[in-house]
Length: 435
Image (tube, rainbow, N blue to C red; front, top):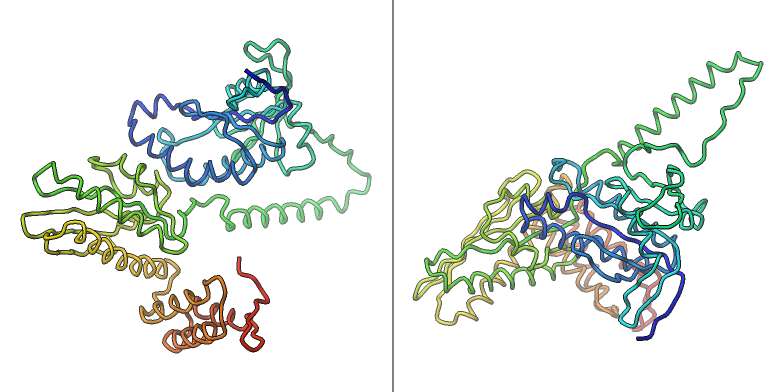
């Protein structure tokens, strides 16, 4: 077996109290972990150029190109978890411990990593407090002065099964540092000229007060809101009285999940995660907190020999209020065609309902006609190459929307953007690219 020895930045993480969480509700805990991995952890690792070496149940071993990348990834995940855990009971929170080390490792032919570099990172993770990140001295040396961090020096620590003691630094995220600061400033001696001291103290107090107020109003202490247009489609209930018809209800759920994911800027919880809640009588508000979504869609399917009836309701996960409900009924002569028709009608209706709900969240309910015109105009501008005709048509749609609702931001922005697309005869070019 071929082996490669190299220096690598290794990050090891695991879930605090995973056995307790799984023992209380294993299916729910697994669903929450899957959701975290799909929409937070894995994308963050990818952005920071990490490679998942292996998963160890509730934990992971990850390799990074640099310690800076590893620390930035860890900080981003831990900050996001502080926000996601806001308002969640302490005994139900998912919290991570993270250890990071820069050291010598051996990479085997299958990509697995072995050696002290991995072992030390794993031991550092084991001594980290919930929500914290522990760095070895070798790792800390690479990021000291490069990242804006509050660091506590825990001093030399004899880690289990590690021959030498390792100096450890802790990054406490979201809470004050408990240990001695890594750099302790020596207090300056008071100067002889004291008449200015009260004024200086007053200014300092004012600055602290303003900074604290800004920190609060910018959201540091506020519970995090779920992502824009985020929804989970819970498995539809089979009310036919025949368990053999479960497949039809599951098919409606799966296809609806796929269709809703096509709505622009939407985030839809994956099918496997949503099906972990099948058959469980859980409150929509709890599910919303667990999965980090704004909306919960639930429903039922009832089928007899000639007809199929689908009931659906959309719930605001923050308040538990029912935003919309409807019934869809079709002839059962062609089940697959029926399923497609029901899903298409339901998805189209939900696309509008979700858009309206988002508008109302912003404090203004816009005209459905203005929303439709704005969406049609945006669709014309989302093509790979915008022709002069499409640009003019989009501008006309935006202006019609503004005539109905002059304060609607979407057509205002769209209309302005059409003037950034400069045309030269029949050859349009963009002067500003949308991000």
